Image (cartoon, rainbow, N blue to C red; front, side, top):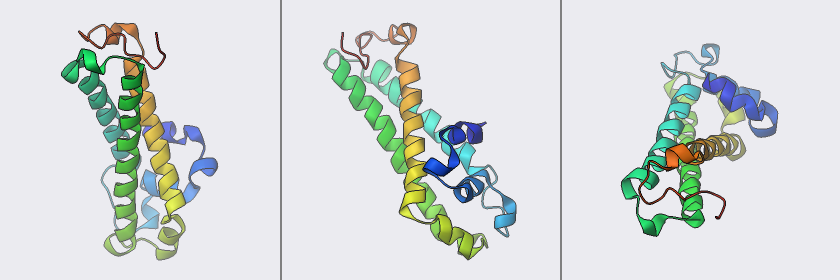
Length: 158
């Protein structure tokens, strides 16, 4: 499921087929499976949970008049993007850094995808999806009305 979602952006414009194969957990690239769950799934679950947490943080935990308004919506939505970008970049960089040694992955294969552009573009896609999830949760009036003070907080000023 998450593989299809991440590949909506298309493989070649953002990240390569090799990166997609690594994230999907293609086992013939490494001697040992490097994860029991495809990386797409683990990154996707963290993205969903963290974006939902940021929504709950703004609309239900903090829920103060001071944090009401368009500016605050953009700050929290941007924090969803930044967190998901940073998490994906740091985690994937660490996995690729130890991939050849720890998992017996083909060093040539790892060297093709172990660079800032490949890792950064996947992290960018992960951040965009985190932003989208936050937007989906905070845009409908029904979900916002559950908040006592932030029910008018939307991306468009009123």
